[in-house]
Image (cartoon, rainbow, N blue to C red; front, side):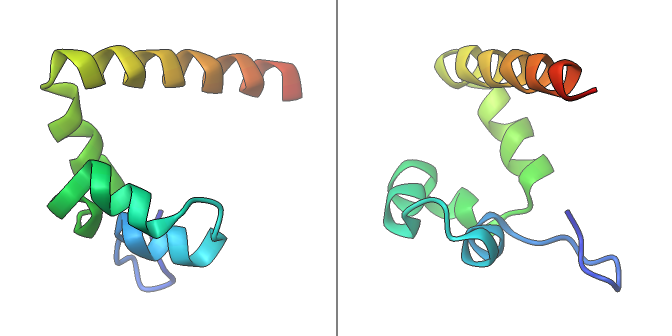
Length: 70
């Protein structure tokens, strides 16, 4: 996601905008990655086998929901 000028939002900025998740939990689990843009976070987490499993699972859920909406 980006702002009107095309600058990417960081994970912390997105959380502030939507306020759905506790910021402290995100910082606890992501550490410094919370200050990165989502595509960088996903790329870095995908390198870890445990996180890769959850990213794939989340992507499948997202695609299933997207198909149901259409």
